[in-house]
Image (cartoon, rainbow, N blue to C red; front, top):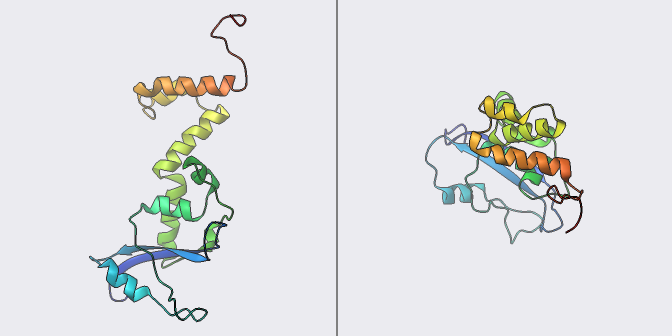
Length: 174
């Protein structure tokens, strides 16, 4: 498909079946070079399963996704999954991905972990957690809009008071 200029890039990763999945599988990402009929693509990628000849191996329906999210999700990167309210039993590494071009993959991988919208939000949260940045500086330098100042204040309050009793300035229960 690359030689025929149908796609210009691809990567995939093998996944072990989680406890709620039927079998091991792969996750495939492709970048079309031209308009592709996804039903034709599904037919092209269907292959015989020697272990079960009556049920061929095939792709489920294709879904559009950001390459950043695709990489973070398919590595089962725990902080990314947690930000989506998810977790997984199996976790993968950069070396588990198979790709067309090493330089392109390096660029995409580094962007997902260091330049994506998720990475930027995660870096802000880490800086706030570590106390390495003043929340007002985030507003003054334009990282966080002024209308989110109350959210920064609420975050600082939660961090400072989690697990304590706060009676709103009163000394005791009244």
